[in-house]
Amino acid sequence: MIVRILGEGQFDITDACFESLNALDDAVEKAVEEGDEAAFRPALAALLAGVRAEGVPHPADALDESDLILPPEDASLEEVRAMLGDDGLIPG
Image (tube, rainbow, N blue to C red; front, side, top):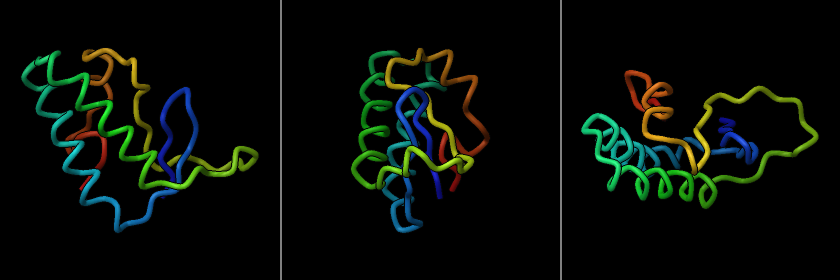
């Protein structure tokens, strides 16, 4: 699966990574639902760090469509709220 972090690039993520990434996504979703800015910022940073750590950079010259799009690290709580689906940012 190809995951794009807006403004940063794409990462190839294996299915095996989704359990740990979903736990990080749950923290982002909870912070957004509660409007908890203090919890939101570190939760989003942890999710994006998890994608960077678990993923492999997708070739920059490849024109492949992203399967998932994540907000940049400096996104606001409201911007992330607008991106959230029923399953959070990362389905599963």
